[in-house]
Image (cartoon, rainbow, N blue to C red; front, side, top):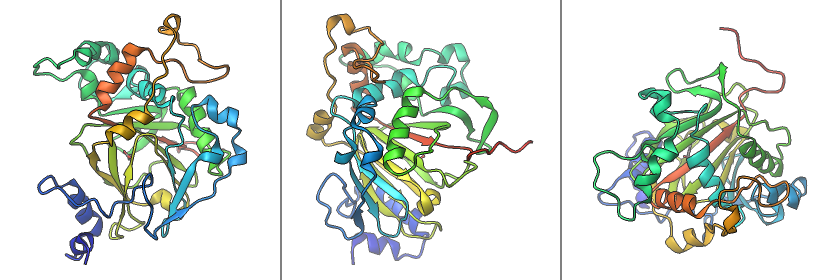
Length: 347
Ligand code: SIN
């Protein structure tokens, strides 16, 4: 019997058991049964998926930093209808831009972050600027306090998600970033969701010892719309269960650049992130190449290519981003909250 099967036999909620198994520090768990979509896929559970590459023009893909859709490697899992895993569809040179957006741009006001829960807006309005000194020193100063960036846990975009009520607010909306909207729509288009409208986003920031508990994303009012998930930085183990908490989950690695789409039945499946896993250093550096910006472009914020949403990332900014993601992971989930013609119920 495999270690995983032995763990599941104890009768406790299968998801919780596996979550604890992969979260365990001592002794560290055996990862041999974790699916690695960027490695050898010998498990019968994985099925290659044919996307809809003609729906995404090469120019539209490139505009948001994606490779031509024909080159996207997409997989599904048996027993998880509607689940799509796209193994790093990003161009080699585009992840630095998206990582910088997640660290420098999206945490800016008017978006909301965990630090706003106990700090005044003027103290949280320049998270990046206030963290740069501490994150750019070659050896981290011995300090009691972590920088604001290191204390960032989540940022919410668009219709603001209320973590206490687990509801979106009709009257608390911050403009959804146009660049992330374009990226999400190209991915959705390639997966057959031409009408996808990104209306809310949650960025989760994970340190090396962070995890995300078992949950279902059901606060959106229309569950027929897919949920998109983008991963950057360090790797993680993702557990995808089923409709019932007792359904045994499948464990898979998520690496920087990987994209997941939860749609159809799997849109409401239980899932969790029990563990952050160090990324393979050589793979990591080959994936994350920041093209040198010409000196006069170092401070430029206009697109590098005509129509592209990508902007050059200055060497200074990239050094801070690299320092951050050396030990951290960023996940961005993008959701459509309301179906076509739907509105929030009056309270
Ligand atoms: C989520 O389920 O909301 C995020 C999952 C992840 O961090 O990959």
